[in-house]
Image (cartoon, rainbow, N blue to C red):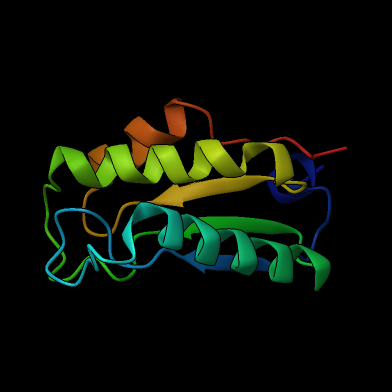
Length: 119
């Protein structure tokens, strides 16, 4: 069995990106809309991706511009909060990508990214 089939459940997986909007600490973060707006957008995107039939989802801080090789603590904290609030609705294996910061990506993944086939 290939690692892809073992982890995601299929040999030819569609892995979709859930691009999180600008987060607290990012220059583009909209303080008027706040974190609830970011979470609502992530929820809407997640539901659309899952309802569209993707096999897995990768959460990414796409709008945390400029990208940093070492992100600030508020970036990973915000991502953890968003993903944590969505956990009960995530029906597919998922992962995280903190852009340009592999250590932060692994930190978040170790805190709960699911790489087993969801039931």
